[in-house]
Length: 284
Image (cartoon, rainbow, N blue to C red):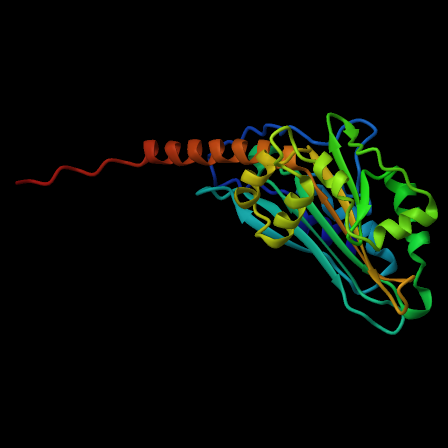
């Protein structure tokens, strides 16, 4: 019962009352092939209408926690689509608290996830060491581009994880995590004009509205196609992890989907104007 109701709540449902036909165009993606990172199974190639099953599968061990979907209408039509999905699991005696959210483009750009974030807490008696946490992250995502400022960074470009020639041992990775990002690594992430560092783009994206129009300009300027970043926060002691924040952003998809959506919204508005009946001329 729960499964069928939940899937129905998330489904991408074009309303029959609208005569407007949407022809989806899949946006360019920053991740491809074997390099398709995810957060608890949710990646940037997942459609909003299919997110329910992924969230439901993950939340089966958290009774009472249900995902919430936000639906929007496409332009001036009656076509509804899932624009965001989230869940919040408050802290309790047996769970330290957790939340997750994902943003999706419109049906015109195939309703794809482009920004995914997750905040995961650890109970005081179950806090992993920072070394253990870094090992878990690298086991899932591979060798990182850089470590510093309390974050493990993965920047993707041209179907590969970008390299700034930083090598880490388990011990040196923890030292790097606790220190500022190596300036040489930060410079190496810039483009040929010294701009576009995805470190800066991540900070800007985290601080702004997560809608496509708000993220599009920075996405176009980013010197990477996408990123995964894991921020590790101190726990009961400085060598333990109290919280881990995961962020996945597909910059290439954001830039592509924003253009597709803008063109589709303009076309829909133009079609609506063209179909608006003309009034009768008044008698003078």
